[in-house]
Each structure stands twice: as structure tokens, then as C-alpha cells.
Length: 230
Image 1: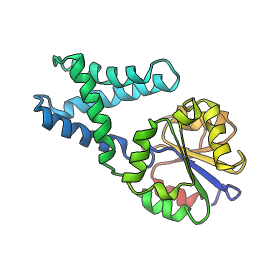
Image 2 (image 1 turned 30 degrees about the vertical axis):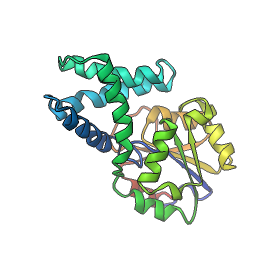
Image 3 (image 1 turned 120 degrees about the vertical axis):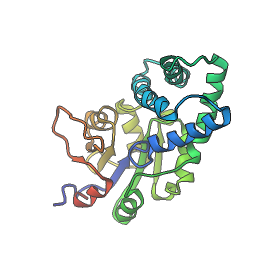
Image 4 (image 1 turned 180 degrees about the horizontal axis):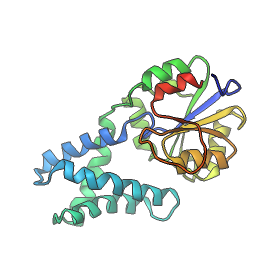
């Protein structure tokens, strides 16, 4: 059953939706740990880092912390939890190295290329991302998917981050798309789904983690599930 025959514009989130952030992040940290010869288990580090990073990103999305605080505290918290002594100067350097190494690893979610190939002939495809502009541009180019998208909206361009409705309005304007003809697809229930819905745009929740949500929303567990919908 095709639910959205009237849609012409599909807006994708990037990290955790098309671009496998956690896998690529692990490779970036592996490079840093080898260079610095840290006597810390990478697995132990990532078990703490992943939820702390998500915690601070949620605060950053709603302007409760700055970009600088996000980059510092998501690392500081982990080293503190592991009782690993490290200076603020080294944390700052690791943060810079991480941002440099992150887009050098470009694993996509299973089915990403196949679904983009499937959708491209029939829809205008777009990106809406809260990620930092320079890093997101590198990710799109280095993973060889930038050519699929007609427009790319990031929070620095829009001046606000998802779930703020202004970023969705900015993306619609850039794409010359109406709300009725548009559909948002993303992994963050708060930023992508609630944000889009409150901006008047229908949404599909890429719920690979099988998160329980309160409200009824159309969900997919795998990107190729979109073939059954679009």
C-alpha cells in the first residue's frame, strides 16, 4: 500500500538515518586511541560515550548548552567515569581530532544507496541536519551520496536546530516545496518527527532501535521498508 502518493519532496535526516554515526564514530576514536596509546578499552569508552553524546546533543538541540560545551563535556564525562586523568588541553585536542577523523569513515546504513536509487527518479530528495555544516558536507561528499539531494539544510544556515519549526520552514523555502507535498524521514523522535509534525509536515520514524513512543506514528525498522510506503 502506498500511503503518500501525493508527496513530491522527501526530507532526510543524515546522522543515524542514512549515515551510520555510531559505527563511523567508533572508527574515529579507534584511530585517536591508537595514536595516543591510551590504556583504556575502546569498548568501555564507547559504552559511556554513546549515551552521553546523545544526552548532550539533546541539550544542544534546544539551546541549553553551547557547541563548545557539547564537544567538551561529552568527552570529559567519559574520562571522569573511567577515572582516567587527562588535561583539558588534551580533551580539546581530541575533540578537534575527532571532528577531523569522523567524516573520513563513511559507512552508511544497510540499504541506504538502494533506497536512494529507488526514490530518486520519483521524488526530490533533501537533507535537514543539525550537524555542523563543514562536517556534514564532508560526510555527504566522502560517502558519495551528495548527488542524490537537491538541497541540504543545516542548522547553521537556518539559525536554529530541529525540532524548531523555523529550520523546517527554511528547508521548505530552499526546496521550493509545500508542507502538503513534503515528508520528513529521521531517527530522532523529538527532533525529526515531533519537530516536523509541529511544523505541519508529515513524518516517518526510522526506528531501528525499536524505541517505544507515546503517539501513533508511521515507523520503519529498515530503510528498505520505505519501498512499501513510497
